Length: 213
View 1 (cartoon, rainbow, N blue to C red):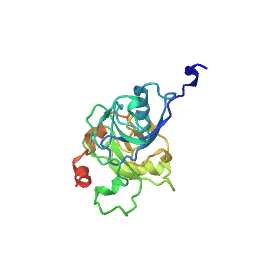
View 2: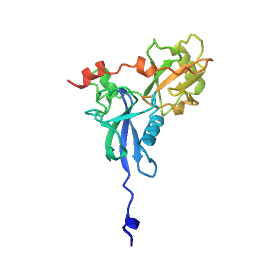
View 3: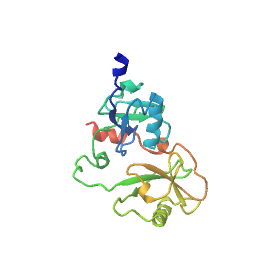
View 4: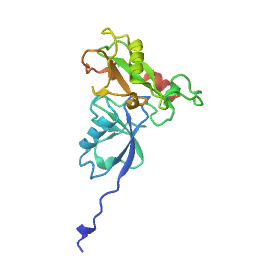
């Protein structure tokens, strides 16, 4: 029998990917094999969609040391990575569970923090995002959710009529909202694709002070 007939495909690799500089993102699990991803670029495109990255993912880094990964073959089974665009690697404690409660104090690990998302205002690159509390057990009715967004966003254009992801796709129901994700509140106008995340989300100083002492 030809040795070629005995060749086996490389085993699948399981990994978790985080968003660069995002202390709230819980990470997404991926299974990588040659049948699904023929190239490293194809995998990066899938990561971009799955983690709802504000910009296209073009680089992967190891979370502790920021070493750049450039090929599918470099990915290790059971490891974690940080997805980034062309911006530099942001050093955060990505692997620490419960990172969100570290925002106030390192002694709050016993507290249970309600799931939430952060919402930008359409076309506004001056105001920081506001928090939107989520509930998996009793999600808000869509009309009630829009009313809450209208009150919190205080858009110049008036009422919030739709909620969009950072890539511009529209959210159609409260059950689609993901803990730790970012969204944009939009009125009657069209969604404005701007660098909300890059310009309005603090990237390092406050969180590095808490995690690396």
